[in-house]
Image 1: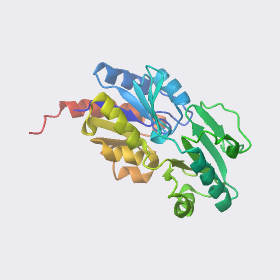
Image 2: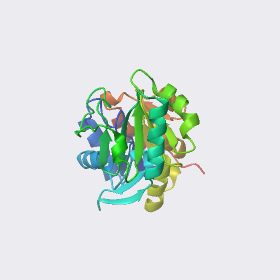
Image 3: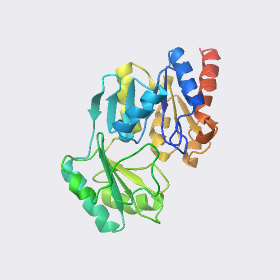
Length: 269
């Protein structure tokens, strides 16, 4: 029995233009009518997650910043915030710049997002925020997460270069083809979801989760129904029980059929 659906946003629920299709919205509404809420687990900050959740009918909770923030959408309250402390953040940024002088950085602290100039190769749909000169000047409170990219270097190479230097300070996650993200030790989408499951009184085996990138691997590994879309990184296909159509073709909407079929199967004794 599936009691909760968890979805990644970019590349899963959202298409390449940052839109939620009508088919996806209809599936979320139908699932809600069946008593199955859908919540977001995303690398995005609470600010954009709140906007998307409201438009798509997601909630009542959201896991943001790759698990660093758990947010109560109905109460507009932060339930947990596991961030990188200020001194650790400063050391991470110093080592990043020393190791990869061409690195372009960005950081989040709850709803604030600080991308250095040139961080995005192209505008991210639905995200309108002014760029900054240097992230170093915004580390006073610490960071929910730090993001790095180096033009011309893929994410695997970045991870492999920085892992020996930074893993004593932070955990490293790949969330796209050319950037990596840093979080406090032990923080992932799985850790954020574990908090939500406890609040809701739901067993992970009764949860379906769908995502498309390697930062989704921890949440797919923890749930009873791991799902993905055709545009996902190949690592997710090894975990997924079913692969749906491309995100640009409303592949997420096919979750409804999966849930209906799962509920029609006889229970195992």
